[in-house]
Length: 165
Image (cartoon, rainbow, N blue to C red; front, side, top):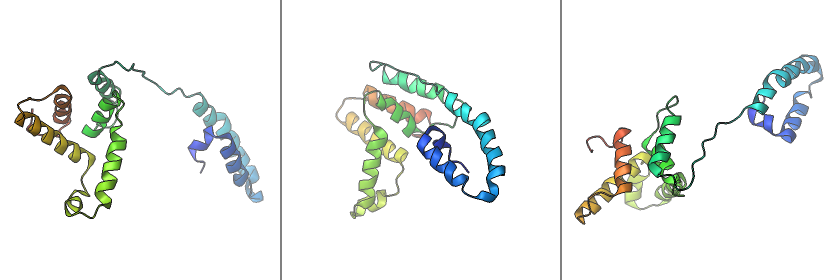
């Protein structure tokens, strides 16, 4: 079976094709399959236009999140983590990379509290951070700020923080 990524990698495709035709007893059969692949399938990959939505840097993160939600309406439901990743990307904060680093630290540390947290999901972690930030802000008398309010709204809408609103 031909790996699809090779259709856009000429050197890799040529190497794969050489191996594919290496069995002399199957050359005729494989030549027909190869010809069909190159005439029917290959052009579709080459000519496919990936849809792109470009948003300027000053675009409010709420708008970025809304675009992300709207574009994905026909696909799989988005998690709170995915929505927040899109939201914070507007501010050049790479939430997924940050979570990957934090998760690795939690899993490799031998400290007792990290053993408990080693199986925490990205969404669970964000919920805990949002709850702690809300608590600290309210304790300080500041209410809930814009970013925190947006995160809580997203979490509630996605079913991530039931009972908070």
